[in-house]
Length: 102
Image (cartoon, rainbow, N blue to C red; front, side):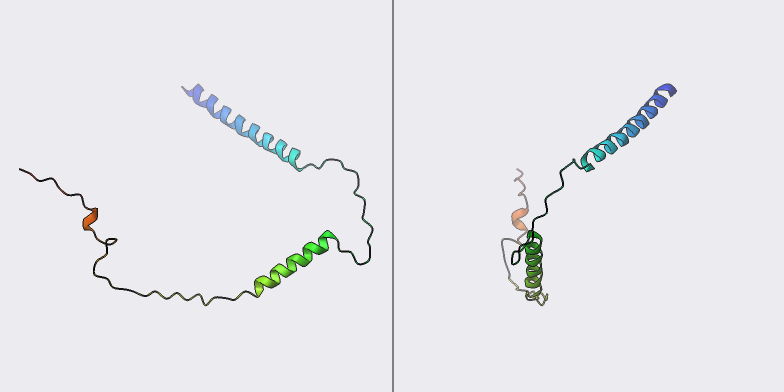
């Protein structure tokens, strides 16, 4: 019985170490970058906007418009209305009727 426990503990630790190396292998595979030719730099033409500039302007406008939004008072007013009977708060409908005993 002792041998079965020792073999199972060793097997568990071996599988854990194996999983660590498999995860490191996946991390290496997914983080390496493929070899690419250097990208050609676009010539700057006077009066034209690049994609980065357009994205920066759009982000700035979004943040500016978001700051202009009205702030609510964040005060809740709860009015209590007293009603004598409502089927929603009636407990009698939720009870099971007992059968008549003879």
